[in-house]
Image (cartoon, rainbow, N blue to C red; front, side, top):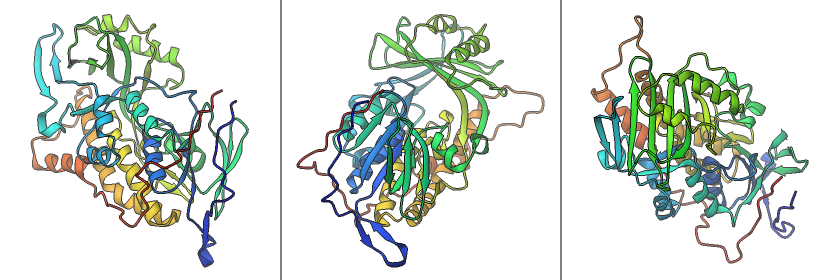
Length: 434
């Protein structure tokens, strides 16, 4: 492995006394697990608040592609405060809207990107997960240490810090550790318990992968839903007009495929989508030559608390709302802003900072998880004993959507440090690769 360039800490004052509480960190070392969206977003804000940040990612490099993710409401405000509005919009998919179609391709319903002020079914900020990850990495790479191709193998915390052993053999000590490593978070399992305690399967499976754009897509998403089987196929445009992103949904109460066994996942997808009409056979024909296949259960993470001592969780690792909510990225971006702000405002005291973060985010998270569960129910296969769907035209739903999009206050954290201006001597660290 290549050595990771670091900073000479010997001349830096790092702690100030706080009596019975031992020491209070003035320039904390924070380890973040995961370099998708939540991790680099948190790294941005932690660095601005004065922390020394390390991000470890088990993949050998940033993962490209992925599904299109959206930023709505208050999440757009966070992107603006990051100074990344122009960069994010430049990388957007530029989707004009969406058409639902029948098996013959006839348009049944249309949604436009400017509906509901850009916060509707198709958001005006819509970007591939990998492209947003790249924007966030490019923004933070000069001030944050990134370690690729490695992961946390062991950790032990005490009152003053966390000792971490990496799978690659390094041993280091940090003041705080945050897991932003997704739905199947290894850090969550290590600290809080097995996945089964927190995962709530919503009864569906989602798959997506890129395909050649041989379908004539031009800024419009197309979705076909088979009402009898509950299956759907979707094609969406991306910035590279020569390719498109394909997606499949299907009901699956018996999902039992290892999320890392790609061959088994592809077999499952072919089985579940056999006989589906519209363009599904043409899309499935590219299953073996796609570079970015992904399949997983549609699930939420529900936890009573998102922290334990000096270890906290963020994004899908803490409170996945599932793709059915359309707000996973928004929760990650807003959560990163709030978590870093509350920790800094608490002078890096984990008990106070984590508690305030959870209190501020909880209602926002729960509203988005409820949206996810309701949307999943609309895709369930109707049965004789199925409960009727609620009336989505009622005021209750309007209020719920409002809480899910804008239902959290963004403090200015005026009393916390903010190193928004570029440093005179930026720290350059090369990613470590295996």
